[in-house]
Image (cartoon, rainbow, N blue to C red; front, side, top):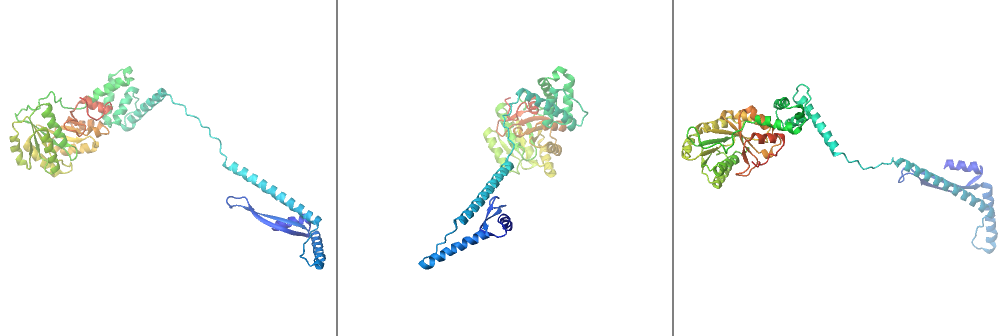
Length: 431
């Protein structure tokens, strides 16, 4: 207001008289940051005073004689002067408001303006070029894995061989074993063959199968024939939860249905009533007798009852590899049974560390074969090769699911080699 009065005095002189004032807000966002505008209407004091005296005199002259309500009559010149001032003030204020509004709009537009975005459709990659680049990356990764995981001397593997080497490492084949296989293949193949992925894969498969000690096919071996004349006695041992009971039912069905052998079942698993009931159900379906043994002293007499059979399968209770007392008790049962074959049942879903600990703990039972179960649930298959090599035992069977009597097969080196190389799945084989 003080600034407005100073402007009035500057334009109209010291005797200026303020006729009208008005203030309002302008600008800002939702009332925030708005400026206060003061609008003043004024005139010269002398002219305003004469106009008022004239208006007052006229009123008295006309009002007293006629005694009517006074009607003020303003001086036309003064009225015109005041009107021109108001119009000029209004025009100036309007122009200032419009200019400020335009400036605010321009500033807002400048603040929100972003550089234009060019949208273009990405070019479709060349599939052949993409496959080539991926192959080169795989080759580079395999060489890096060779140097970092195996900590060997830096070496450059041929492209075809490096892909197979990378597969072995991805399948968790032991590093020293993978190195040995690759070295043999590299020595026996020509440079042209080493550049051929198929030739390298076939060579790796052949050497890989050679590291898988397995039993001869059940179709060739007469499982009923033994040197001591007793029925072929086969015991299955292993930790809890690996599928021993289901596996022994599959073996019973295989010998009974496929080999036409007379089969008898003996169970030592009296700790789990459900396991005994399950095996009884299987025995009833397959049509074979089941005997339950509670004490080691009962083993000999029970085997005597089975002397006329071709094959006797013994199911044992699952034992923790850390329970030495139960393992000792299991050894006593087997010492009385004197089985011709003792198969350690392992789950292929376990880590190599757990599998090797199990093999070591069950060494007191004197197992001579290994059965791998749940191949359909396994993530990698290289551990099978590692465990068989370190345990120095032959692979007798693998199971690929829960179905009885199906989804069990003899250990086949080529089949397992294909599993390691990713050529087939861990499900049921068509063999």
